[in-house]
Length: 159
Length: 263
Image 1 (spheres, rainbow over the protein chains, first blue to last red):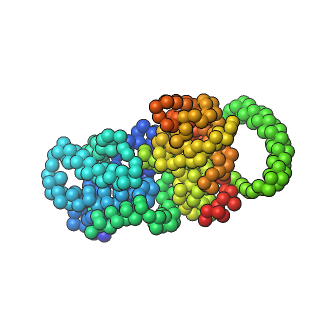
Image 2: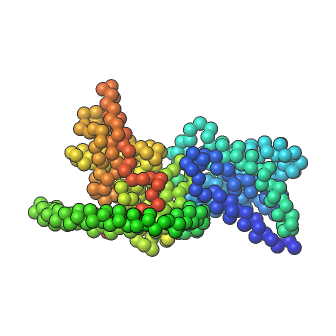
Image 3: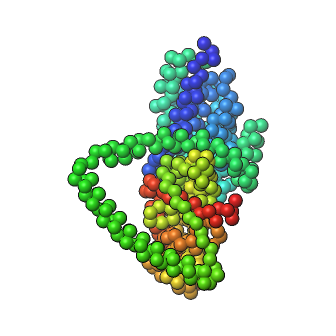
């Protein structure tokens, strides 16, 4: 059963990439949750032995290609995110939903910070702390999405 | 390790153009994502087209027929004017005929990054679109291609904060540089002297200087001129003519001589 059903992980990332480029009204663009970051936290917390930093790096590169951002921007951000998530996956699992939500906010915040750093290297300035909005929306999305992902992963026996 | 690799990648990508060919090749992989996420709006359009009453269609048909008649009449005038223009240019020995072919492209997506004004269109290298190809809609210039993939390309709009283009006032040919501001409805004219002759309502055309954009396409209209005697330059706001965020179909201007000069 082991190598089976890994396609589901790939599938979730394809969906996340679709959501990442879905057209939104201009004012909502700032609030678009970081779907790929959410998935990286989820999968590294669920399967820390199998999925590592390299996997997040490749997912990030795919996101860079699809969204057309600077190559390596999301790769760096997601790799660092995966590293922190792997360091703390035991705690993340033991947290109650409220604590998890806050922790996801912090992790995605780090992710956004790195993304913003690359943005500023490219000469694009973000007004104030608006770049942190996705961290908030992602954290709010976490308790809604993860139960469903857990159920799917369990029923598909992804290991 | 991977972090260092990613950082190196970022720096190479930002400060050199070594990776541009790679990106252009791989952008074909990205196009399906934009195509799929654009499906709902396309279905909406299609339904809107299909579910129209006969009266509406008849009315639209007659309106379009009138419009065609008017445009044809103008085109007849244009032919005469063009012939005269070529003749005059030949007399002045400055004949440089730019052969322009126009290609209709569909906008299949917009960049998810709120900081950049980028469209994704469904025409690429296989249709003759190259990096630098000018993109316009029926009412004015929209932008230029920054990445041409095989079957899709990314278009940087003239309103992007990183974009600037040389323009010329239609009334008196004053030259200026129109810079994007990051606002979809506003451009700014940079370094235009306080004393220069420009006023509200002036139409700006692309001047063709710099060799990137073809000359003579409408760019925008001056909406406000503020002259502060304490400052060296006037503060000129321009409203772009092209419908930056509403055009579904755009035109790619494939001017042969310009692209030959560049690539």
